[in-house]
Image (cartoon, rainbow, N blue to C red; front, top):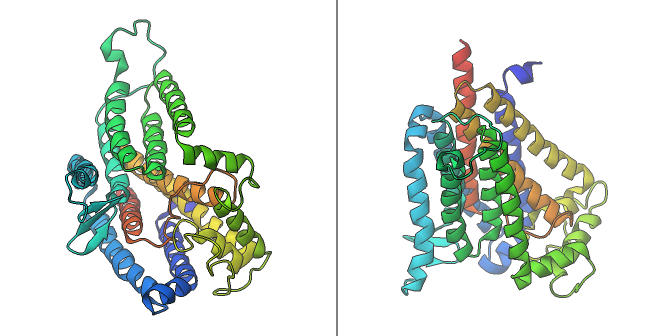
Length: 379
């Protein structure tokens, strides 16, 4: 009963548990790769602690102590900065400045950052601020579709989402686009928008996904491998095959931390997208259950915090953060276990990468800020 009334401490505990598990898992998984590439077993772990956890903690503390009203006021600025950053990634390589922008990364004074990860937080805050400013009560299908007013807020929302779609599509970052789309469409629904608009948008999104798959060779191959895991095991099906072998090798109790065999050149991306299978091999089914329960506890408490908030901005922002982290964790784990097609997204708080950990720590800071505000409102 105490958990439901005051989720602040449990949310913080769940976050600390996930972050701690991430440190231990990365320390175990990254040692081999660090030695091979950098000559020191702790190199990648130190890099993650310095540029991910430390910077993320600073960002999280700023988000925690900044007044929610200030965050709401600055949300549009964060969104604009995010859009500019994504646009820079598209424009610079086209004008020959590839040293500063390549793929999904920006190089800033020797530091490498992935703007799309930080954009997830900025977009959630922008949508929460937008939809908290007006009444969007659910309505029936209008009799006059020609009346432009009945198409609000669907048309403006689709225009903004379309801009984000184009920028991420040009970077071929479909994994991030999927997470952002699911989160944005969920916020649109939870804001109280008309049901008929949500049906149109979700059906359109499903159609767009089908077109993506049909007209992209490697995405079509991923779906075919998902439907038939034994298809082309030495090429397009190699990653899934090795992932399933890795997970299955862990058994009930696992081989022990640091004792994975598959991380020795068999499974690609072991410190990034595929860190979950290696953890499953080392910690076994019991360890996997513990990790999943930690995520569920975090998401559960995050939703409670959001529901207890008194203002709509906090409700939508907190819920959006939970949907983002929860859906990303679900997609990563399911894709590695063959339950969904392979998608290149990191496992929140666990996978190697400073940009995504920085973004997640800022999201955590906002959630804890909302929880703190809820407690003060009760006093």
